[in-house]
Figure (spheres, rainbow, N blue to C red):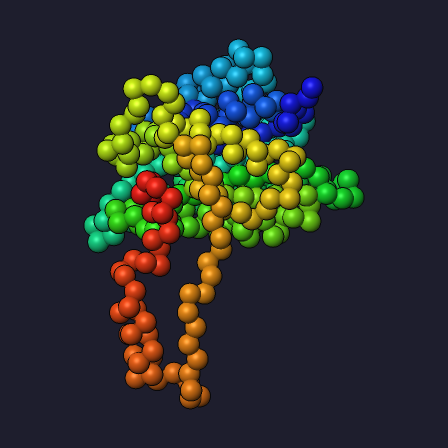
Length: 312
């Protein structure tokens, strides 16, 4: 019996630790050859020297289990390194079929205290990093589709966060980057569908070095699998990468602890029309002030908390 991803090649960025590692191992378990990317810096804020060790260790772990894997230690936020990453997948395994974008850093600060570098660095790694790899992977699939005269196999799974949905007071850079990733994903989903490529985005909750502060108040269980273990997220990534998910495109899914929640696109909560040629200040005051006065503060984005833990 063949495995769901047998014969496919996947790239997973930020795969040396945490979520990316769990995702790379899951894709390999499902039969994919995996390019394990990680820049390998020791600090979760992107500090420290780069290291090949994290990516190479995960690739070695996959090979030891009987799978196929190669390490790539470049910085995906560097346009040329992202091109070389896609090129490595094609050179090593013949083609690219699946791209999982996971690499990221944190530099938290309140908006009134955040430095330009703290803003730029997080946007660079998260949002530009997702764009860079998507840019070259999509060009690869477009070229293959044109050569084949029809759709090919392509899957993109991007990583956002509920921080963009509900706001995160000390993470304006991170929340903005994660919101941008959703926009990048939905745009890519529309642009690439005709080539056979799907693009979806997940908002995972998992206990990693990136989220150790967020989930500090949630103790790990004495027995059984931690509800916040990255291993709860990886199966959804494997599904979205598989042929069975060929009809799933442009979707946003929250995932953690044995739960997936499909998030609808924003819907209009209320609508007001002017009785004049254009709204006046007084008319807007008469319509909107009572409307918001009757609604609890923050109700617009409260749906995230219904799912359980607060966003991370």
